[in-house]
Image (tube, rainbow, N blue to C red; front, side, top):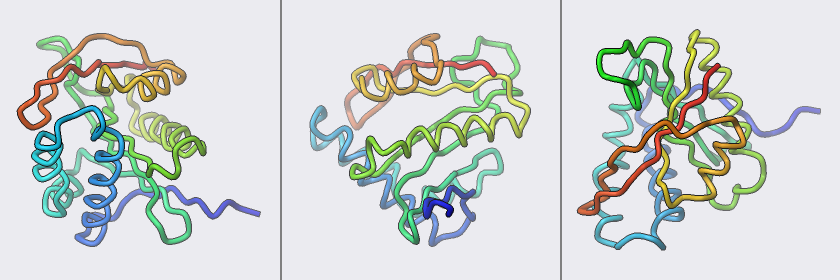
Length: 178
């Protein structure tokens, strides 16, 4: 008997964009609101999680969204970007690099293994595109996420600034070779 959980590549449509915007707002708020000022959270969410912005991201040919559905309900997703320059030395080619820009799991699905399932699928996607490296940025204070990525073999290679409203924060840049 197969699991009712399905991981699929997102269609590049307005209805999917609306779902991504809604889940993005929910998960970002649930994950980061307790540690950040409400006005910074509101500004970031308003700028980054509109249906219009999500549709633009969906329509980028270098971007793939993997959606996790339990029956008809979206419970998580990951956003992948090919040829990422994140953490790349100046002048080096970005070819063969996949960035995990987001790996979001609905709060009531944390601890169920869904994040690990999405990560394994992201790694499969990287291999499908003949990528040699996977990179990602993660907030230095998001210990749960940092430990999750380290369990998958990611190592810190640097840091970069992340703008959350008026607050400039530090993200760790993590890398995993394939």
